[in-house]
Length: 606
Ligand code: M6R
Image (tube, rainbow, N blue to C red; front, side, top):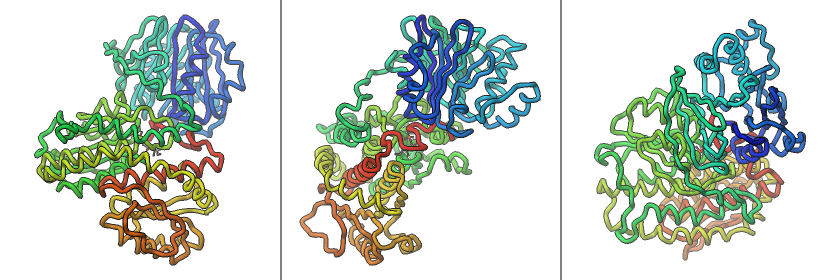
């Protein structure tokens, strides 16, 4: 999950490469580098850390060349230092790479025997030397075809050549790659986001394809080196969303945007006039579906788990959830009457894509719930339900989570109603309740100073726990994930009823524990579980919803009451204080909130 950019132009390219790399930092930010071609030479600059470091360390304004490639890295092979930063170059070839070359050790031995010298610890360098080797005896297309056939694993590549100063080669297998078209220049990018400030005309490479990008022409080839024709897509422009505005961080902005996220989702899917949900073009008869499998990673997986609770509550469908990295290698029993739903904000997550690909290869019914509609997962699913959140830039997923669970909830309602498992009155009542959700989220967002104060205790603790039952359990997992990824504090999400089977041993005097106990069917049970942790010294932050009945429980450290709504919708509200808790905790620690250490927004490697 690195970011790649390439520009072939009739004017110097380094400034635009730098701008694009800054946009691509959501894919990785361990190191950054550029290679340009000028006067028959490859000029290569690279630095450890962010693109800003690269700018500070080198005089990039004077970096000459009308053609060049750039890279931001999320380290897989070799520590994140400037030596391992991309591009990697031989005397005549320079390469940027996203992905993993699985047979790099064998290839390296073969190339060393042929006299090639390696400078870095990366897998990428074998690509440089393989191409260099093949160019001794083959023309460009043949050398690329031969090289790609020797590589095992996944890759998106940008390649420039000292002896061919007017072109960039792009190639893809597994990892996404797009070509963009501009006036007197053309581009290569690991996604459309990197290219959007320069063009809205895009072509996506398919697996196995490569392309030759010149300033006035782009030619595409299949894996056997035969020319292929490709479609040009026009992208919508949502450039304004890429701005932080008055917010300190994208995450803060994205948390506050959630009422709009939900409003937009409702507008897109809910027909308030007819009290119906506009999911009409479903490509299968609902009777053809007997069971559902939901697949995702991280926060998207928590959305899957949330949907499982709703599906089971409101329909008779059998539902399974799966973490994509597990699903792809298990011996799945594929079933024709099963609907496979893939949930992903980016639509490019490698594990989720591989799970989808596996289902497609087995001719299964596949549906994507995605934010980026131009993404690989959206393009390769048979049915797509976009979440319409607009770009999410903060690495920690916030508004996309709410967007995902909204769309999944609507799908549950729609399928439940089509299968006559939700009574028409209940169906319409639930649709009506949704109307108030944006406002309820807005009110819940007003909890701010209280959460800021509470976050201090979480920062001082060795670790913390997030407990919930039923609908609140996936939210507890999500709250714990947010806290650990942003504030680097150990946090564990757990089913409240499971504590006594082991984790209760972790509870010690003063340990902060978040208990999610809305007034739903699980309320009394969760309150009992809460008392068990309080009795062992835990400092409990209880998050519940407003009610005329007081919370009858003693020794609770802090309570946050979210607004009241129907049980199905409470998870939306419970999520908000947990996002803020993680945000303020990281803010107090001075951590990089939008780019937490070791992570990337779009995880395009296994
Ligand atoms: O783009 P995706 O939704 O497929 O990404 C999945 C996870 O990588 C992502 O949700 C990750 O867990 C977030 N950083 C969590 O905040």
